[in-house]
Image (cartoon, rainbow, N blue to C red; front, side, top):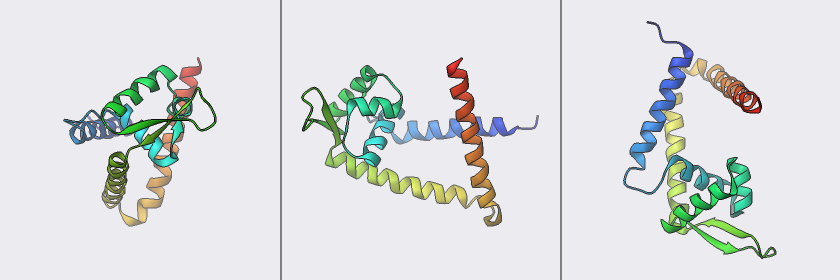
Length: 146
């Protein structure tokens, strides 16, 4: 049986998930928690409400994620300077260092994976990956709306 493009994309998704499981084994980190850390790392300190919007989850869900990350020493909550009802979520120094390391790892993995593609094909490959991601995103949004 010949593998289709979809078969390969599903394989890639599974391989990334398995690698994340391996990388975060023995830590309190999950894909959802890492995604939250990534958002804060790239966007800076943020309210929980803004995190819920960025992650497209409920505020209650964000509260659970932040609670677990705060307990693990990854984030801290501080009072909002102008809104008594809101709190700001920021990374701890330890988490900042871990996220910087993760960013370096991302760059290294990106380079390694792109090096698997013939240099003459890389631009087309990048365009193709972007096109597939955008189409899949549109399909998911359309399915969610109906």
